[in-house]
Length: 252
Image 1 (cartoon, rainbow, N blue to C red):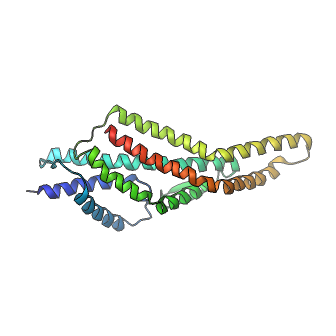
Image 2 (cartoon, rainbow, N blue to C red):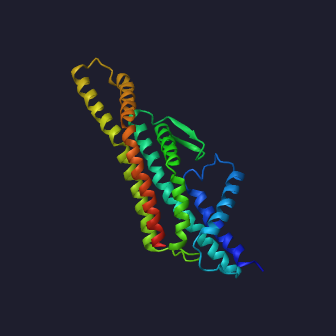
């Protein structure tokens, strides 16, 4: 017969595993699997000691399986929300690439094992560095520990409000991506208008040949100018991650 203490640690293990499957940085394939396994095991022991767990996990096999599935979905939802908002950076990078003429240029991203936009990779890694320096991953683990007060073991319920919140976060990802890329969009739009007027005034000028490097130069210039203010945008993004995780947990 499995002891109640061991069952509690197994439930904690599944919730942490769900978080690690989708959360930014933790889900990276660059991190070796054995390192992830050791980290998950260590966090399971620490969280199991400190988490506010009142209800004892069931010992019936079928009921226990359903509870473990609920725990995995709870952690997965938190990681998925965090990942969705981080993907706003990829959306912004994709829009910037299209406007600057890098639409056909993709880089292999070791984090996702897929080709990603050039500027999207730059913005993502810069933001991930800021996220780690500001202990954003610590805040995510703190939210995981606090989740046991809002969603006890076996207490997760998938509701219409929860699904609606996930859809809202997806829409927020797209809006944030457009807002982040807005300065580059405006600058490139004004450049296109200026080139169009110049081509009318000087028909001999090859707008395509001369306009492409000009848009790249202006795009990089705007990105360099917006980097200091980009830290403020990242602060808003990280706060939205914490807020949406709290909302998801409350709706469970």
